[in-house]
Length: 42
Image (tube, rainbow, N blue to C red):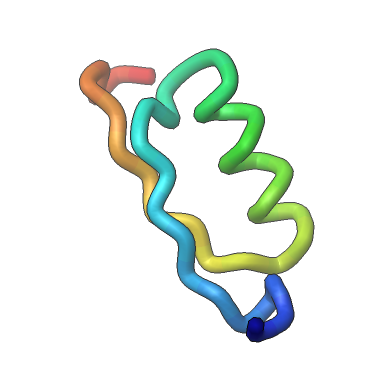
């Protein structure tokens, strides 16, 4: 498996709650994070 900093990860439900926290944690570790959420304004 590649190191986290070399990975691109898609997070669904990323505008709130667990999805948002997961996306933030992965980004802080250096991953490229693609976000998808239903609420565009969040």
